[in-house]
Length: 251
Image (cartoon, rainbow, N blue to C red; front, top):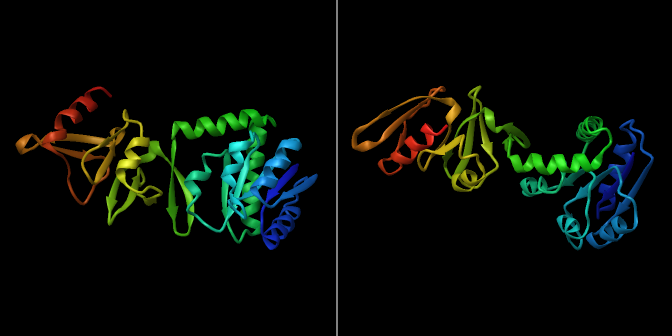
């Protein structure tokens, strides 16, 4: 396996090399770059590596700029001390996002993910690149935060999204609550499948597959009951009642 490490901090680079060599993988070569410009030059003059470990904040800018000048077709594992780039990283054929300091367990898990994908696509990195792009476009998962770590939840398992104290949360079919990596419900609404999710009101977005029943209220409002019990009633306003009926009748 040929690996390219893009990292501008020498201690961090040396740590990655040491951890890589202890993964017991067949590492044939490890190349290195320390800036956006150097990385662009290296990628334009050399054959694509099998895997890239890429820091995000480099001395001459964000490593995302490399993708604007190079057609990178191999998987990328992003390595950074900041979690604020997580969502953006998945726009650039990322298969993992590791927060520094990077220990042996984190790296082994990421390499294992790479190997599993490699085996699935029979070493065809072009197919893998297409898979990563198409997978992202389908928006079949959403990134959530659990403690200090991030993970993904299948959108098909989300019963509802709600906002509280200016944060966006989701509850899945097992009644587990997660903090969603979204700024607000309006931005989230734009990314969701309109045939599945409906913005019931300012606080809730609901999944049609988990609606148990609904009933009319006074002033043409609608009360929606989900398969999971909530502490409050979900009310569709008079203004949105017609669109809700149209939406649910077309499912």
